[in-house]
Image (cartoon, rainbow, N blue to C red; front, side, top):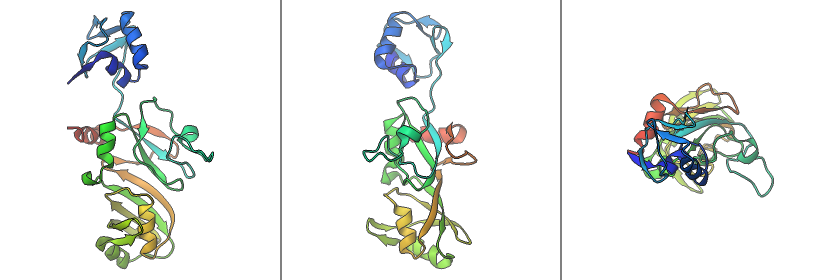
Length: 231
């Protein structure tokens, strides 16, 4: 697949589109070893692009971040609460969060540089699974499994979940929608108010052993899965 050279430089996080055109005109950019002075030239998206001889490598489609407690999943807040603007990961400006987690929910939050990918990750029709670990008030049993399988009614609608694990006051469950506070509402209405909630997985991307506050590129099989959503 080909794209304009200036757009490719922006997509690889080199600079703004305006600055990319300036670099091209100054003959600072080579593509597969050849100086290209036309910023609108069509180049292969996988081309060997260099700035002043230094490789300009493709950026990951996705990053994953372990969101701490108390951080809003928005780029700012008119009430002055802690948000991604102050406490989020340091990423190039072209990345944006994929959906949101409640301020008090921790765990996996994805950042995407592709709007189409973001839409497909979020669209209910895609039914991308999200797995959460909740600690709750009480000791859930098979009655909760049956309730979540059948569907729990909430103010936002009736939702189902697959229970992956029950152990003491801990429930791991998978849902395929991302409505606001949906998991909390489901468990509360099923009789088990949530004490803590953490997202462990989004599609093929796992939180794994990523420490709280840390960010990492999504690689290997998970990156291939993300790329397949654009196919």
